[in-house]
Image (cartoon, rainbow, N blue to C red; front, side, top):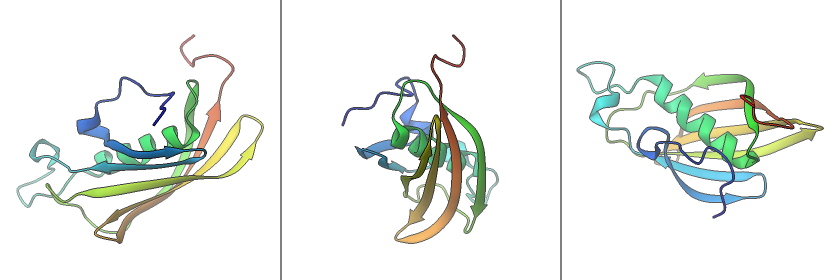
Length: 127
């Protein structure tokens, strides 16, 4: 796996890449206790979004990729210690803009889906 972006990401927070190919990625996350939002074990949605966003970024896999916008749906709650897998595919590319479809599943059941609009810039966003 050759990952060209987000090289300093904390995999315990955003997931561990399982597969990266041209316009495609699969990333796995097992949410930890410190990601809980309450006593029921519910994981804060921001961590699931972070997983999906990271999967989108490495599906594009360019050092200067940034997220422009996202249209997402949370379909099912996720609890601590429930492993989820994000699958991302670039569905459209026009110039520097790439549209990435991401689905997050738990045991084959969708828990999140989204469309991420990513941009590949000529230089780093902070450069």
